[in-house]
Amino acid sequence: MPESAMEKINKFTRRELKEDEVYRFSVILCDNEIDRDGEKFTKESLEKLSELYIGKTGIWSHDPKGENQTARIYDARVISDPTRKTADGEEYRYLKAEAYMVRTESNADLIKEIDGGIKKEVSVGCSVSRQICSICGADRRKGGCMHRKGATYSGRKCFDKLIDPTDAYEWSFVAVPAQPAAGVTKRYSEEISEKGPAANDIAEELCEDLKKDILRLSYLSGDGIPAELTKAAIERMEPFELLKLKRALYKSAVSYERGELEKALAGNGRDAEANSSFRV
Ligand SMILES: [Zn+2]
Image (cartoon, rainbow, N blue to C red):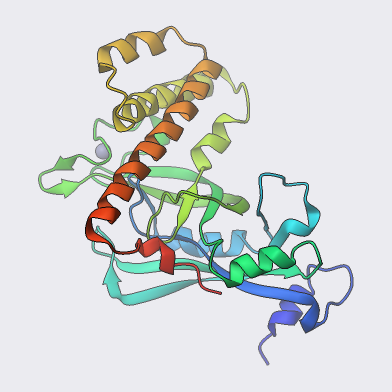
């Protein structure tokens, strides 16, 4: 007999919980569509993430200490949608997770919000060991190539494939999705930078990546600063300054893009598809 949801949940609990003590819901963690960073998970990466996310906790507010405000994933699987294709022509697939919370007085409102569909955008963090250019197969973590994500080469749009996830971090509910279809943002590359000073050559490589990101984000955020000026300025910056600048630019790029999206939505008066992606 297949394991019931409660049997799976009780593997993570100190005492055996009864059905009416827990609140169960589903979240879509990520998919294989090319996201706004020009990156996508492969089918195999999603399968691997479905294992890595089991047991991982999610947080709801900006206060991870709110212990009653956490949920835990007890099951996850990759689901295919044969009626839909990704931008690069693959069958659409997404990672759907089942999560639970222990019902308490303090999370009653939160549960109402989830039931009402207010909390529906999920942010995930994971690390991947390889990031492969879709045009030539070069690994961006190992120097990469001259192809730029988002650019078109002989009619093929360049994007990165995220290969071989090695770890999944906490997930949380956020306001702006990076993967509009799944309502998901990821922050795997920043996780690596946050590990602090690495060996010299790794640090150097990370700085080069940061500089590339900064130039790209500076353009995307619509700040209007000429690329030559930005280039000259970042050459003189310390790694930590580069990281801080990248984060600041990322924020303004996201809000700029959000503004554009809102304008577009107001224009044709339909709901973002992201709104339908979180189902309880
Ligand atoms: Zn390439």
